[in-house]
Image (cartoon, rainbow, N blue to C red):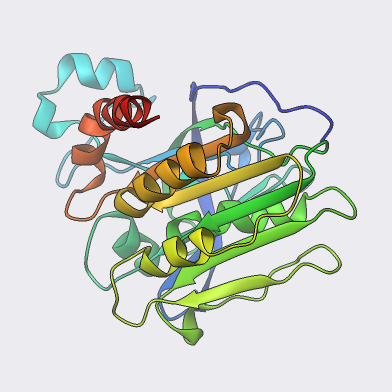
Length: 281
């Protein structure tokens, strides 16, 4: 893309119906959504477009038409529908189908078990979309770094790279069974890093800090568990002197916290990290 699209915020509610599901790896399930309820949906050029999946609270029936503002006004907070943020792996405007890949660890969490049990015809409300990143055509090279949670966005970015782009892509997964076949530009290979029981992101930090950076301007996308993202943010901003505007970097999740708990502190956590790095500069 010649220019970075302007950041957008989630705004619309869509009703998405499951078309089909597919197990990509032992711990990742793909769900393809479609239906008339997705009319008007668009990802607006971002490769990290994301939506919020809205799940009904257990045992609660909400009035139709579904209206979050009304629900939050009329229902007690513990009956509000929880939501989870997920990257749009692909949007097929011609078919009106949206693909989302879910990391699944048995019965843990909310969205993973839902995806594992999803069947054609199941309905889920979706809030969004929003987005912040797409590969810059004018960059001299690109750095893509993430764990499983960032893999859909990294895969989408690889598919949209400018012709002839120089790319270093690092993806950490548990083992070789979790690797996926992805479309990559000519000459670009993903470096799959196997965690093998080590802390999430340890292999990514080692790979990036040990990388011989090419000359020129980098466009970087670094996302995943918050602890390793914090380490790499410090490394890239302070040691590599990468300007903030060339970085898309954020903790998608944090070990030991569910989505609601992480969202509640994420802004403050990011601001604290920025202050610490400014003092260290």
